[in-house]
Every structure is written in C-alpha cells, then in structure tokens.
Amino acid sequence: MPDPQKTTKNNKRRLIILYFLGFLLAVSTALPAYIQSNFLGQFMSIKTISLFFAAGNLITVIAILAFPSWIKKVTNYFLTQIILILYAASLLGLVLATNASTAFISFMIFSVAVNLIWINMDILVESFSVNASTGRTRTRYFTFINAGWIISPLLTTYLIGKGEYVLSFLIAAFLVVPFFLIFTYQSKNLKDKIKYQKEPLTLTIKKMWLNSNMRGIFFVALLLQLFFSSAVVYIPFYLFRNLGMGWDILGPMFSIMLIPFVLVEIPAGIIADKYLGEKEMLYVGFVILTISLFLFYYIQTPNILAWGIILFLSRVGAALVEAMRETYFFKIVDAEEVGYINVFRLAGPLAYLLGPGLAILTLTFFPLNYLFLFLSIIMLSSLGFIASIKDTK
Image (cartoon, rainbow, N blue to C red; front, side):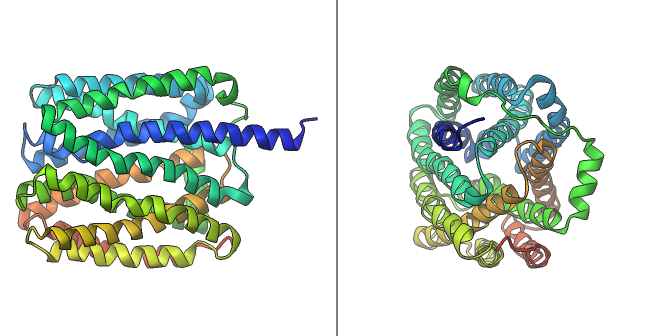
C-alpha cells in the first residue's frame, strides 16, 4: 500500500517541475501572442486577419473534440511530445513565411498546437493535485505561467528592434528545446499514472450542459477568453496601427499591465480554499472587465498614462476571473475525466472564433474601437452565469 506522505511529497516535486515547465512554455507562447496580428498585418488587412483567426480556431475546435480519444490511445505524456514538435515546427514556419499563403499554413498549425499543449499541461497538473488545495495549486501554476507572460512583451520589444518579428518566433521555437529535454528526462515522474474515463463526446457535452455548475463555469470561461481575444489580437493592433504607439511604449506597458496576474491569483486561490467560495470574486472580476472594455472604447487618444492605468485594471479583473475559473472547475473535475477538461478548454478557441467574427461584423459598419463597446455589453451576461453556479464554500 502506497505511503500517503511519500505520495504527497512526490506529487509536490512533480508539481514544481510542471510549474517550471509552465513558465518556459508561457514565455514561448507569449512571445508571438501580442505581435501575431501586426505580423500578419504585413501581408493582409485587419478583416483578413480576423478570418485567419476564425479559421485557425475552427480547426482547433475540431482537434480538441478529437483530443480525448488521442490521449486515451497514445497517453497524455507521449501526445505532449508530439504536440511540442508540431508547435516548434509551426513557429519555424512563421519565421520562414514570406506571403499570406505560407503564413496561413504555419498559423493554422500554430493555432491548434498552442491550444492542445496547454490541455496536455492541464491534465498533468491535475494528475498530481488534490481537491482540498486546488485553489492554491492552480493559482501557483498560473502564477508561474503569468510570470512568463510578464517578461515576454519586454523581450518582444527588444527582439523587434533587432530583427522585426522573426526573432520572436525563433526564440519561441528555441524555448521548446529545454522544455522537451526536461520533460523527457522526467518521464518516470510525469508519465500517465491514471486510467482515463471512456465516454462518448456527445454524452460528455450533454452531462456538462445539464449540470448547472459546469454549464455556468464554461460560459464564465468563454467570456474571459472572449476578453483575451480582444486583448491579445485587437488591442495591440488598435494601439499600434490606430493610435500610433510604438513597441518601445507598448512592450513595457504590456509587461506592467500583466503584473496583477502574479500579484492577485495566489491570494485569490488561498481565499477561495480557506474562506470564501469563488462567486464573489467572479462578480468583482467581471465588473472590472466590463468597465475596462468600455474605457477601451471611450478613450481614443494615445495618452500613455491613461491607457497604462486602464490596461492594468483590466488585468486585475481578468486575474480574479482566471483564478476562480481554474479553482472552481478543477474542484469539481478530476484528471481522469479528460473529456470534461477538453470540452472546458474549448472555451478558448470558441472565443477566438467568436471574437474575430464579431470584429468582422463590427468593422463592416463601425471603427475598431466599437468592438470594445460591444464586448463590454456582452460581459454583462456573466452576472447570470455566475448566479447559476453553486459556491464550493
């Protein structure tokens, strides 16, 4: 019979490894994040870019729907290695892209791989977590990830100065190497140790829909990802192309705005575990997001201080929602329920599918800043979804 204390100690060691791997992967995925719209803008208009994102995320949705069966056949450990190789290849493809066609193929692979690899990581982290400390475990994990996101805009600013956008993709691909080596070296600790539940996808979706808690937290996740789709794709484009802010300003500004993700999430996770449930902080987070998006629409001048404050506040709201989204969902779902995890992570590509669709519709009739106004109104629906879930406290 396994020694509980030894098991706990080993799981903590595995989680520390995964926290560090999450940091490496975050730097790699964050480097292209804020520049991808402006990179693609070299070859096409903002409407065409929106179509690119919509197409990429439609393919990603299809891939995620098939992902549970792949994991069960290949195991999560080996599938992680395969996805990592595809992810690195897609980045090198973007480095070599010289026109819209070559950029399209690499971007499609990138879009799929970057979403799937984080699902692999979700399953690994959940494999070594216990429900009593889910809030602390998930927020520590996301704090490491967000630390990677904080340094990436500064690094991107430096790299753009040295070699346009290409160097950012190249360094992102290079960071896959240490991740892959550590991951492979730690195979004994990280290989699958759980038996995944086998359940038809349609049944998984039906059960999630009929469960008010799962349905509510899914739509909370979808709305947060819809905010991220505007923050990552359209805010950099708007500030750079419409308001004329250079990357010497945007890089430091984006790094500062991400600080709340490091400062807020761990305390929020501890509070959720020990004192409150998640609903109160979800309400606060979405109110801040709604106001911030309205201000994105309202302020149409390149005032660095004003934009810096609003961007920072928006991430305070996003950090609260992200921490509570992760804490709540992984308290009610375990690692072996891989189907639920995959469907839950559909929120990301679905939002990046809906976001560009909304952008295309908006740009047909209005200037780009109106997109933020419409998103602000959509965020109000979060209040109903939060009300529908039952607090874990």
